[in-house]
Length: 262
Image (cartoon, rainbow, N blue to C red):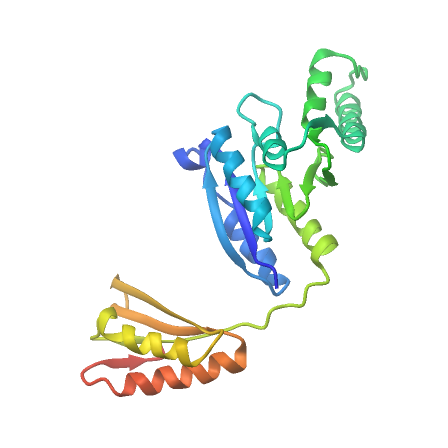
């Protein structure tokens, strides 16, 4: 099964001027389709870093969504960086041109203004349809200004109201054939124990149950449980259940610790 990745681009996220809403919604959209997010990367508006991140995404074999930076202002570098990463020239995509001109017509009609496609600001808007040569269009139901795909890397606007329906469209149209991953997570709360003490047990359970991941989530100031470790396993349901039995049996061998499921 392919892995899913997410790249979020923009200085405004790293500076705190905007709060990221893409990762949470991406996790939700994937979960609705029986998939999960494997990694996420934040990148500022620096062309060299964006190009490097996109080059790695394109060579990874993963299905990757990139959100942000596909507009036509000076701080929007993603389209050019995508072309550089793919080794392609930039060109005005004919379908993108048609969609952007439709949007310009809609705006003129909504404001009672004449449609003037050759007006300088309208010509500038066409830059939003200048994509790498082999790009495929991602429709935008919000305002018709499209995103684009290069293979399995998909470029979406930074606006969540646009990006998230577009992401859902890509998942359904391009990857609807993927079999939902059957995944189960089981855990207990462990008190009066240190992670270093539990590590050999965790390593043993993983070694004896291939495909299962063991996780440890310590907390030192939980408002209800206080200091504790949430210790668990995740994986294909049958394998996860067997590993969880082994984990619980291993915990029972420790003296002086308390284990709870609630």
